[in-house]
Image: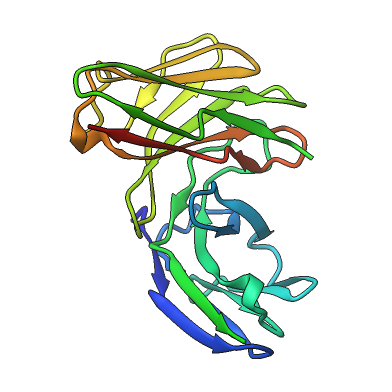
Length: 116
Length: 115
């Protein structure tokens, strides 16, 4: 019930295209859903995050769509660029935003390759 | 923004020796630090959670006597891999919980190679 399932495992997109990565969760207690970008040999960096009280959040070329009833959320990267080539992880946690919040549960990761 | 400095970025050690990895929160107080392990092309696996001034909580299957975690101050947490063996070779990453944006800030990771 703590799992977060991410797909696809890998994704190849042409420059200028839209990259879409999906995640699904079981635990309805999750209330914080971040996406991280990781380059080889580096730690993850926060891209964008959403809480379940909104269905969509956009920051620049990155958009999270959240479907609470389906227990799914996705990352959309518009106008994908070769510099976006990295591994992307979705995650979820319980209780973030308050005085007590817990561990992040990560998805399996998606290797994104954007061809020029 | 919140920055976590992790050192060393890479280390090679001989089998049987111990290695210490440090994570410092540079501009905020990290009341909680998380330590992860990541194998090539895999996701991050949480090893333990440490709160300042108290004992770390280890995830199931993680040997607490092998992976010693110390979180003695609000700005420093350390992970010591004791009696390292080649199977301990991995990428270790720390993450600090912040009160600034209620998010998690990650260190840059440490590549440990045990020969």
